[in-house]
Length: 397
Image (cartoon, rainbow, N blue to C red; front, top):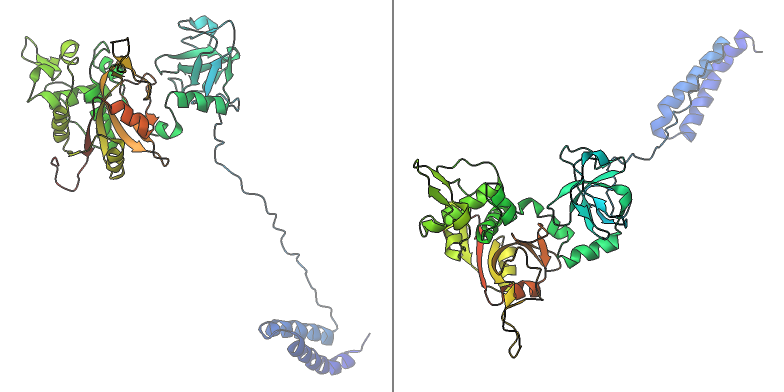
């Protein structure tokens, strides 16, 4: 150990040597701190005490992988039985559709082996699977209820795609389901029997929905908040000035206005009626040539297009059959429709058209090829573009 005198004598020497070493071996930005440490150590030596150095280890940062909170998408064939997925009745015993998730709830429709069903969201928005029961709707969206899950099997993704494609259904077309209206279901919403010739008013309404146009309510009739009331309003405004026998309303003995559905909804709609309804909705219309190329240009310009066509045609020349035959080169005829109006509301990147057929049995928008669209129009071709001109003038082209 050094005496106090020796320590005090050596202090200045050590301080000079330490500072010189710092200036030589430490980067300039760090030298002030290094010199402070050296001076502190020398001062401690001069006093005969050892500096208390506390070495706090640097904190250890544990890198955890980020937590992905994105819900796992439902995949056809993953056995999750989520709404939207497709099942097939697999039991030879067939399966009953029931009003509740139990055998005791009763039974209604019997679905046979091979029937395609789609998992749906129950009316109470609860889980679609409860015990051995799953909530489904039939392939044409007409009947909903519960079936025994053990009597069904989930279809594979490949089988589902093939099945839907055979019905002109696709994910691209599904994106337009929010504007789809079935002409038969719509009439039942206002007290009708669901048998009508309302393809024109319904197709026009779907074009309006795509364009953001609103049809005014019928004066004197309280709108009940349904698509059916909107379809009747399109018929009314389309015909009220040109053919009151087709406007869907009548005057009751008390002098009030009420629906006249049975006879007037069986009257066909023409393009002049469509134009009248467009004007009532404060929209605009434009002439469009009735072929897939012109309709594509109209869609790409932002319009929706109502077109006329036919599902039947005269038999080939020389055929022994003289009755009209159903076309085989367009999408499936629905509801017995022959001369028919539909709405073309979009296109796919591949160049196919999204068609809202108000009589389609599947009750969904359809994806059709240009050839199928032209085949539909063959023999009864017509087209009119509909658009919202805001902020431009609201008038027909």
